[in-house]
Image (tube, rainbow, N blue to C red; front, side, top):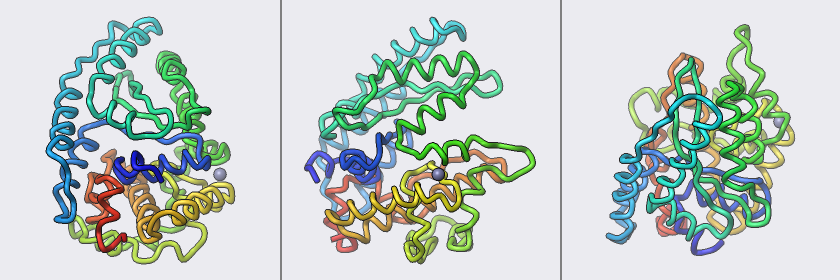
Length: 313
Ligand SMILES: [Zn+2]
């Protein structure tokens, strides 16, 4: 595992390594307030960590630069949205963190704007993609797919494209897109068979001390390997997803502490469980760093820092 990978936030380092290993086409990081603040908090949370003043300043600067970006779309036509995308991307490229990630990741790394349309409102955000050098789309291709889908109001088409970019099996993408008012959401169907592994009581009493309190035993049943990426909701019983997750797990555990890799899978499952629960009950809140315990926050710190902790060395 390269020094560059070890300097990435742990959750991104592990998913990025699975990409470099050829077990997933791509992975991504949502660039937002949570991402910047999570890293700053994580770096200050353990005595063993030794973040440089420069890195902390870089994160502050990135957050401020990101917040200052002014996004305007004249009208919802393909031309105007495309022009806005190009302007937005130019500004995103001035965020120091984008350059930082690009310098650390030993593959192809780029940032793109991301548009989403709900009930005639246009939402936007930014995503950094990680691919292998020889198997990456261009940023323009990803932007084009997004713009076309948003203007045509066919977000499902982009969701499918994006799922493939992330290396999710087609069968699970089909399952995820099959929504009906007569059945529970795919998110909930995906986590429901394992819901009894979650200690709800540990979550209800406020942020738990550790992910161990929420998901005490996880990898004792093969099926759970299917949860190899945050916000990937495998179809229950999908053999393809399970096998893929198992391969990712084994490759990572051959290089770094197995307990750390198991926490990655537990945190991913716990994260998806909270997202599914929010969808199920009509909320839309994404879990904040630390909501699943201390490890959840720690995973925003660089992998190289985490492996200095007694828990993971
Ligand atoms: Zn599947």
